Image (cartoon, rainbow, N blue to C red; front, side, top):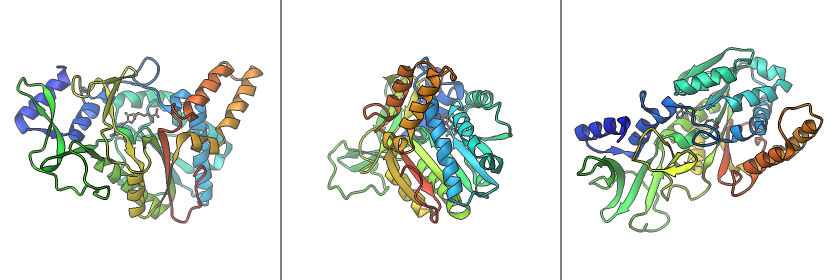
Length: 365
Ligand code: SAH
């Protein structure tokens, strides 16, 4: 067992079992050994690769989406451009470069990055060093971000937020917990009492062993964001992998290390832990808070509607003239395919938009 495993085992021995949500929070965010606190997980040599790391086109199109959403709401100034979990800062760098076509937009925004990892904050500072304005970092989204129109992007952030899991047992829906086995190792178990949580029952009686997932952390955060948008105006774009309709049922908790599935319990803090995002649930949370939700739309469809194929062709032409150091065209084609094809990131990943009720339908939806 690694050092974080031993720390968790001591906690369990003293206090009893913890929920999947508590385990995820510790494994990902422990200040000493947590997965995101201790490393830069991206790229070919890391654990996984994200859309902005695949191609600059992704961040550029999102930058243009933000400019359009801002103009749709009367170009409010001042306002905020916020990113949740900016990773290496690549998406924001590409988005700000594309947004240069509207200097008024750039003049109007304060850029705020929400990042809990000190390691990734440093990487973001380097990536964004040449952006001409100060950037503010916060550990979490808080009320200080609710007093101006809010333009927010989150790519592969919500999948890292904690989920709770419930399993259908003879005695009813019980919460899946993590405790210790007789040898002192971490193991999965079930709450002794059925849960009082309201679990949707509109699809008949579930089979024994059925799994239901919910992310109170994600829903609470979306409510906060949507409330700010409902009151001050603005737009949020959430891109992640997850369910469209019929969400919630099925076990999607997974650990990934070095581009392969890994054990969830064996080496906490050494693998990324994620779960599918329940877009329909987030959309409902946003509407309850008074904003309007659009989507989810599959990422391939969304990026095509924003003009990614045209953008790729322009980049390829620029490459041919040797004026851009972007590599050869087969590489560009490979990047495009990776972002939009079904079976790659095109259909599993989806985009959800949350905008002010009075705003027009956002681009791509
Ligand atoms: N958006 C980036 C990175 C995705 S990985 C990209 O697309 O490449 C998730 C990011 O969210 C990392 O930057 C991670 O450190 C950050 N993160 C994860 N959980 C967080 C939390 N609870 N609070 C703040 N940041 C978090």
